[in-house]
Image (cartoon, rainbow, N blue to C red):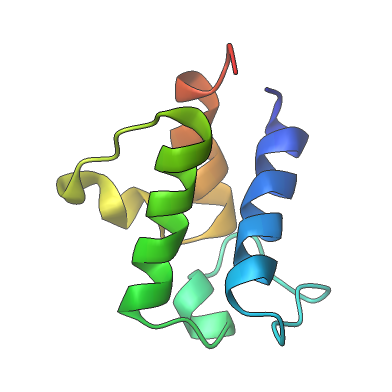
Length: 83
């Protein structure tokens, strides 16, 4: 997967979790939880959906790497390169 495909997947997962999210004005370098109405359970839902779709194990210690859209893409890009 390339960077844009990863970004699209993340946005799709967020939209599935919170249908009322407005993703048009999302700033890629700002924390997602500050911009969207995501709580810790929503965040875990994102992690679990990535795990389910791509058999991707994300250790809890790495969760801070998924704070913003840009950091999600940076973290996931090498792990999903062959997906």
